[in-house]
Length: 151
Image (cartoon, rainbow, N blue to C red; front, side):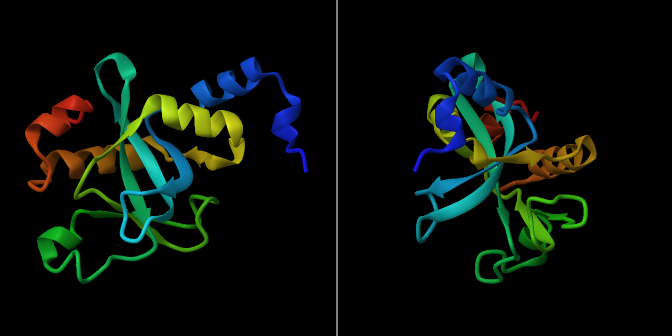
């Protein structure tokens, strides 16, 4: 079966991908850097120099008590209200304990081939809260924070 996106020229699909990779973009794709690998939502929080890599943070449906076992770590999870964001079915949390690196080319290819991976954009207010939480996180190196413009 042909997807609607297949009917558009590659240049249109590439333009769509470029427009939908920005700070605050929410993308849903299969990722291998979870245990087990699975489909996850993530938010783009910044770009490396020369825009080769994206810095991303995961959206989780709940706070995993085994990973976030103390109040400090629990505090690194920013709540997302499902009434504010139609891409989530229930209140969720942005994990600001780590920044995951992704290839810009890989994500652009995914969006170009499957535009439905793009789920929307979080508000400026939410991005400010995420950025502040990331900047204060002692679980993330200063180099990684600088790499993606968090400091």
